[in-house]
Amino acid sequence: MGSSFGVIAGTLLAMSTQAQAQDCIVPPTYINGYLSEVESEMTVKAGKGCRFGLNGIEGAITEAVIIQKPKVGMAGVQGLRPYYIAKPGYHGPDEFSYGFIGTGRHGGPMRVVFKRKVTVVP
Image 1 (tube, one colour):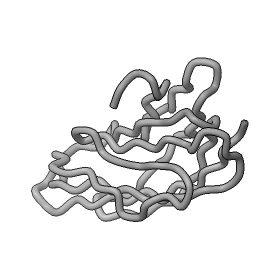
Image 2 (cartoon, rainbow, N blue to C red; image 1 turned 120 degrees about the vertical axis):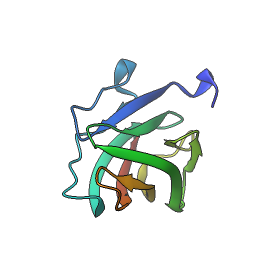
Image 3 (cartoon, rainbow, N blue to C red; image 1 turned 45 degrees about the horizontal axis):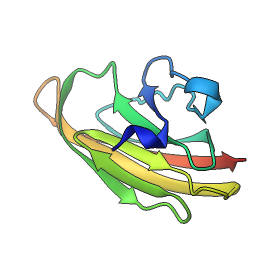
């Protein structure tokens, strides 16, 4: 993904980082196990975006996938980092889901799914 998107790394399971000029705000999201589904909110400026990583979990991520595509914006995966980009000129709600798949610290399966309720602002 090129630098023209002005994206930020949203950090999960730790403190989130905010983009320059508040392009993207992702509050910390905590999971309660290696097989988890969580829902959280995020705010992003139209035409801007966020990248997501999974920090603080002991295990090996082997795949990151988009599970539910957004209705308005665009989501994808670069390496093991999912991202979301809001449609330029749009403001309003959107949502999407992504997951991290791998092996937990003790060798069991890991599948952590995040459903993001997005608010796109001008």
